Image (cartoon, rainbow, N blue to C red; front, top):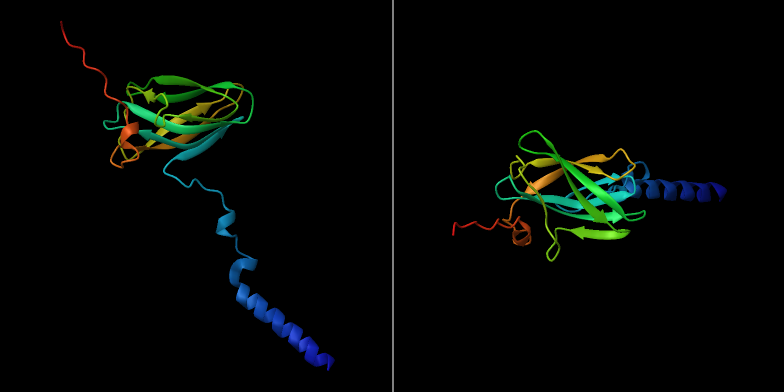
Length: 163
């Protein structure tokens, strides 16, 4: 009788192990964090940048669209990029504590000028939180082909007409 119970327990254990498959030893994909959008993410000190994308039609004027999560006190965040003349350029934004949205519809545009980048490639961007070493991120460059991005492409500069 004891042998039967032992055999039943062993058989039940073998069936459970067989039905579990690789989940006993394999990493579950749902536990791996990833960026579930078109954008990129980076962390620099207390500043987290989420869903960063660059929008452009010509690769010269590029609008950044991103979310900043500031886990500390209000700060000035600097975005550095290399322009077409190989010069370092800085663009600064104010990041209040909590979540800030930049470049979305209704927000002011953050436009990088004199950039030499191809639509469809990646724009190297360096994020600096004061007091930290900063963090580099490759931001995808998209155009306004998709309807949700069309209103976010950098606005055309007004023409100056001679009087």
